[in-house]
Amino acid sequence: MKLDNIFRYSEAASAHAKEVDSVGSLINWLSVVFFVLIIGLMLYFMIRYRRRSENEKTPHISHNLILEIAWSVIPLAIILVFFVRGYKTFINVMQPAPYAQSEDIYVTGSMWKWDFEYTNGGAVSSQDSVKLSPLKIAKAQRKALQKKSTPEQGDDQKIVALDKRITELESDPKFNNLSYFSKNQDLFSKDGKSILSPKVLTVPINTPIRLVVTSKDVLHSFAIPAMRVKRDAVPGQKREFMFTPIKEGVYYYTCNEMCGTDHAFMVGWMNVVSKEEYAKFKESIKPKEGGTPAEIGERLWERNCKSCHAIDPKAPKGIGPNWWNLWGSERTFTDGTKAIADHQYLSDSINDPAKQIVPGYAVPMPAQGLNEVQIKNLIEFIKTLSDKPSEEKSEEAAK
Ligand code: HEC
Ligand SMILES: [Cu+2]
Image: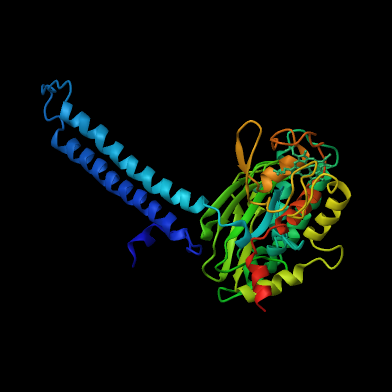
């Protein structure tokens, strides 16, 4: 048995997972050492220096300089080791891969589900990958009604109706044994291998996956334990983080922030599949009409932005900056601050252009007041305006 298995880490399925685990093990093992040392010494001293008779006097000791220095310096050194190891790992994990090489997925939390949107406009939801047990749901609803601080008219009848349903479901062994979570994994996996499904969050193996996480209502937190990633979903913010899956399989994700009654149901499954299978999956979820987000974004640009923003690298300087090679580049603003042109920056500069102003333009940009979907489509369009070929494109070109 490997010693680290004592700590029962979940399966390590991303490129950085082993590194995270090794920091975890370092801290865990040191905790074990100190636990044994401190408790051991305490027990030993209790027996060795116990009071032996009624008139035994305790010697008066005021301090011991060497001991005091030792117990300050040694823990400090240990904590510095934690810091250096942790910091190195953190930087490694947070280091984004170049935009052109990553597969971007928009993750939106809301009470109580996760929605995932792909760059081609296809979408899946956590609710499709877990069939919640109707019995568990009925019980949760009943509990919520009972706990309501200001009961409303009709609540009593609802509780009676739910009670009836609960009794019915409980007498049916099919539902009584259905756990809302694990059973459903069978629907799209067999012997730990994933079955390709157009309804399950699916990512390609050995590819940097960039998740852009946000929330529609309260704080949520998106976590995939096997990938060793977790990021808070904050309304109004677009947080990016990455992982590279290195093992095909089926892994669960959860909400890691207590966000309300049905927080526990914000779970689902993610498939890691080969790149070929992923291409099939992405094709299968592609919207049939209306075009991809980038195409819709282009039409929006023609209507609303073209008069000020050129997209051709050779275009003369316009009223606003050229969008060619904007995506992922470093921007410097009139106040000297800098930012990378990522999802957060582009969203801000469209709806709140006064926040960060690119120098050298006479007219300020009017705030656009676009909705989230329009902004996403525009960003997907801006991503295509680049001479850094994405893997997908260069693969196509190679054919
Ligand atoms: C009236 C002209 C005008 C229109 C219309 C306009 N913009 Fe702008 N935009 C500007 C100017 C001027 C700037 C540079 C000053 C600044 O940063 O606010 C700018 C900056 C930007 C930036 C930051 C660019 C960079 O180089 O960092 C983005 C992104 C942007 N606009 C998006 C849009 C989108 C999307 C639309 C259409 C929905 C749009 N703009 C419509 C004038 C315009
Ligand atoms: Cu949540």
